[in-house]
Length: 449
Image (cartoon, rainbow, N blue to C red):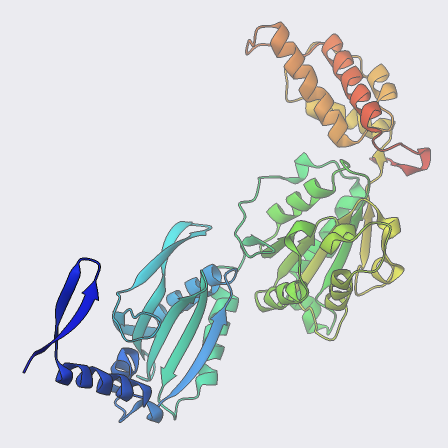
């Protein structure tokens, strides 16, 4: 019998159909859920795994924070598609009591954009031995992912995890690609050795300690020698430190993690990056402006993040297969424990201000890219004392802009002596305004050969 329930409203009395049996049945359902009635995911897992109830299974959990999700999720999905037959996919809401369908999110990868499942349940079976698994991906708090692996109790779940880690370390998306400290993929600017001004000694040191070292890591390992190296690159701004790092990144076949001080803001982040680097080695970790790591003031030598970096370089964990390159404009502010200890930095390259011979070489190199009249370099070389390679490049750039403007932007425009003289005056004026780096005679280096 259906009764009615009367309530008073601003528009008058309203009668609502009311069934005591319906209310009681609804209450019983709530009680059953609270007593442990299987949710939809559990019901599907029970049926798929061929078990009597969910207590007869076991679950393991993984949690990936937002930075790791694009890489770890990509590797997991690809690995499952190779090693397992994916028999069915479903999607559930967070409580697992409602089917929602599979939800995807588009991520950026070196090969382009690709959609990955972030809310999905995979029912898979091993191609090798037929072992079944139910694998549930669930997004939490944005793009953090919680992954539940439901399996039969006799399964050795450690073997599942190890097989996935082995795949990720050898064939995963991170292998031989470049990421920043937030594990976002970076497209490298094409820079070769011809784009960098290096002395023969500097080039030889980089070849021996980085390029050839990575190529022959297995040989060093066979002799029980360390397979990690550290290189500290120092010098005033604009002397070619970053350009040298770019050239190195283009020459090696390895994973590269590129770190700037702005990307590191909490403890544990550096240690985590080194852990990842070890797993996908050989890896080059490049740390730009190490003296400002974690917001460290250059005149202070105490920083929790710098201390963490020291421990990663020469701590308890072996950094086999990991090459660290750090740059700094101010090596004098770095602790001796960092700059003067083999095992942390085995090689130091000092990029001072270019001497006359090197300034001539740099100007000739940059001018060779442009049409120009006959240029008398001697007075320019004399008047550019104290300038970096970056200043010289900018001088040629400004000269070309001046020439273009004077010719009404004709393609056949040639740089003249006057264009270069004017550009030099403009740069000298700017340097005076901002009181940029003041040269010292003993801070110049020469180019040999």
